[in-house]
Picture 1 (cartoon, rainbow, N blue to C red):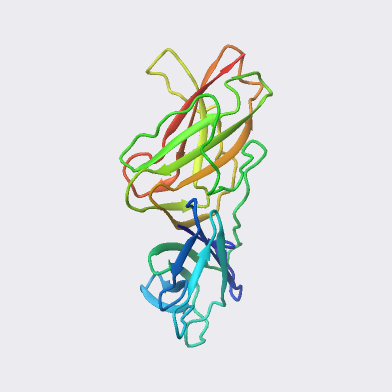
Picture 2: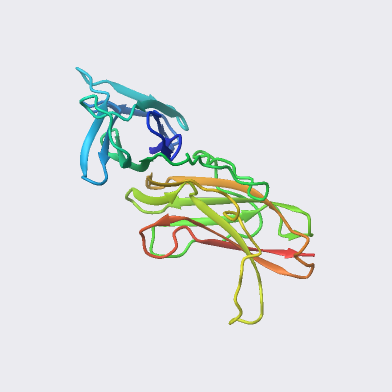
Length: 282
């Protein structure tokens, strides 16, 4: 099982409701039958970051326990709404607030939002060079030329493949980046923005001391919303990210490009989900 928490934006003006969306996906090959805990499918608490005081909570308590069935690849979704008031009905002051969620009383999620008079920031999609496709939790491993195993002090391993390994300036290259949890335990990653992964290309050089500035990077020019969120990946579970980029005319034939990818998680040691492959420019 994999759970996600989404907010409709990061910054909220006074009086603007906070829309929350929770999803729970069955990544197994068979159906999942879940006995619900006493508090139901999930519990939500909102805490004032400055005082570390919980000011609002919500759960789906029930008089008797029920059950939840998810078919293979199926997703359950719930929507909640917070009106910027505490549990007593008083309007809360401007500032930072942390949203903590426990799905099925075992999958922890968290995000931070800001109540502010300033302009509202919304997550922005990738530009024409990015071509981001939302992650599909039931898609099989990527196929294609290249590929490399992830390295680093993490149980999350990455694989990167391209739809072609020989290109010309102006060609569009499509990539598939897959990460999998190889551990026997759930792995929780923290992210500091709406961007969960990055892909970039650098020219191969014979001089090992040369500075290798990326000739293209997925995250460049994209106004990613700044937010704190946690993603829990269950043992053996994977996430697949897809996108595309156009080989610029400034990239000359005869060059070889290293194309790399990794997750953008924060707070851990080393790079998580690192993967790399190559493409020849003819």
